[in-house]
Amino acid sequence: MPVAKSDKQAEKLIRDVGHFLALGVDPAKYIADLFDVLPVLVSVMDEQGKVIVASPQHLRLSGVPSSLKSINTVAELFPAYVAERFDLPLPQAIIKRSIDRWDLSVQHKDGEVYVYDIMHRVVEQKGSDKKLILTVGVDVTSRRRADEQAINEHKSQLSYMSFHDPLTGLANRSLFYDRMHKSLSRAKRSKSNIALMLIDLDRFKNINDSLGHDAGDFFLKHIAQRLADNLRDTDTVARLGGDEFVVVLENIVQAQDIENIASKLLDSLAAPLEIQNHEIACTASIGVSLFPKDGDSIDQLLKHADLAMLRAKTLGNNRAQFYAKAMTDNAVNYLLLENDLRKAIEADDLTLHYQPQVNLRTGKISGVEALVRWQHKDRGMISPGEFIPLAEETGLIEPLGAWVLHHACERFQAWLIQGINFGRIAVNLSPRQFRQDNFERSVVHTLFETRLPPEYLELEITESSAMENAAETVEVLNCLAEAGLSLAIDDFGTGYSSLAYLKRFPINKLKIDRSFINDIDSNDADAAIAKSIIDLAHNMSLRVVAEGVERSSQSRWLIDRSCDEVQGFYYARPMPEEDLMALIEDDKRAIKRDSGIRLLLSQQ
Image 1 (cartoon, rainbow, N blue to C red):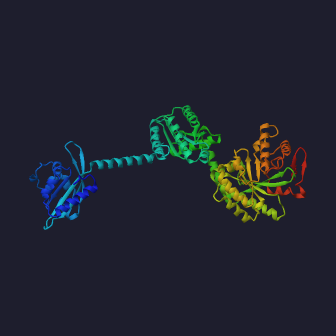
Image 2: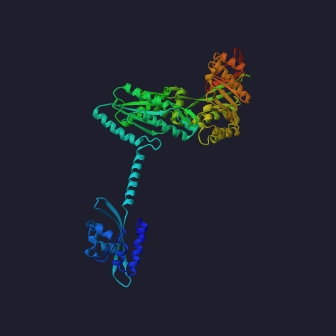
Image 3: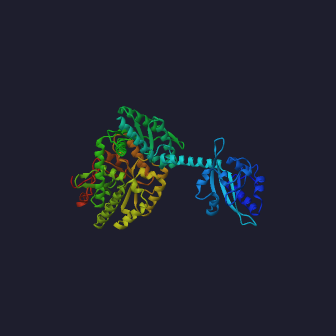
């Protein structure tokens, strides 16, 4: 019979031995002969606990002489603590309470503790009404130790995963808070300073969008390694999530030390990294708050470091910025303005201004662009340069964009009913608005609600938005074109368009960015770019519009280069509806030709 080395073998062993005992085999002779040399615990006792036979291994572990005659009771086979484990004596516990399995730990003479898996079986012998209790035990020490080691390793792994970022291996938010609590306690006792640096990568989203998330993860792991390599072992560096990291510096003596560390980190992070055969560089913006100067709690320090980091981004990225109290004041104003803008959208408390677009060949208005304006009840007219970025950052740009689209279509349809036709109305789309799910359906729904024929609506999407996910852009634009809308690429020349995709876009018009128009009459490079865009558009059978025309010399240059349309202060500023209506009174859509073409506005 094989030596039992596993649970299944032990179970088979007790089943087989029990079978022979049930047939009436003499247990004393059977056990003694079979298990004389096998390292297995085997014993047989009667119902009173008197031991009939025990294997040599069992006797050695029990510490009794290897003589069957010297064994009287079960207590001699098992240490005293076995009896304490059960409410009843062991034989009765086995018979009455069906206790058939337990672990026995035994300390050998060498000091090692071994574990045996003990199994019992009650056997009724053939031809007798007496019951025998068969005990089999196998050494499971190695397996128990392996199980314990695996459990401990698993616990250790779970503990590590609970406090470390799975991607970078850096401390996670939980471990950061734990260490920061301890750092603050030490700093308060020693009256020392702590610097908290919040680090956010600049334009990291472009890496994910252009090369994929695997490339983004690869980049983040290397960024994490660079941070760790440039800090002391006593410093804490953690990943809070996404592309945001935090560094805790203890025992800071002077601000110059922080500036030196920040400069070192910025230089390291900005170094190019090769990904998918591309050299990719991504700068970072760092916000710094100090304990106790800028706060005495973790949340305060994080909040102030975040405000400083946002200020660094506003100043142009790739820099470190210390927190100042004025930032909190600005943040409060920002929050109040956000709340007011939300209420203004909900209460329909906004208005539209309209800027004409002029056909350079005919001198007539060929369209108007709808531009949102906000007359604040307390602060007066708020510049779009102030509230549009706020809307984009807070997500209010989506309801704001929907408001502009609906009211622009509604007003143009009202003009058509009055017999007034400016050709079309253009609405500029924000990147976030354009990327909304089912955006094209919402546009068609707006046209249906306002009853505006689609040919009178022109949607403008910036070049950078169009190229963000060019394949998806093609699908959305195709749906809009099939619905009958006119489509224009705004700010053309600034977004690095792929001509391969540009020719797939079902667009009708390119709008030259105003940055190329500003010095078009004096800067050869700007003039060359503008001329190239005009030629490109015409070669692709597209119309081209120049934005930001403010001088007659710019207008004349564009006329000479066959630009189709213009838009800018030289012709007309954005104006409320009543001023726009004045342009058509007494046929005031007439134009004059001098050094250029210009609208005769009613107020001139």
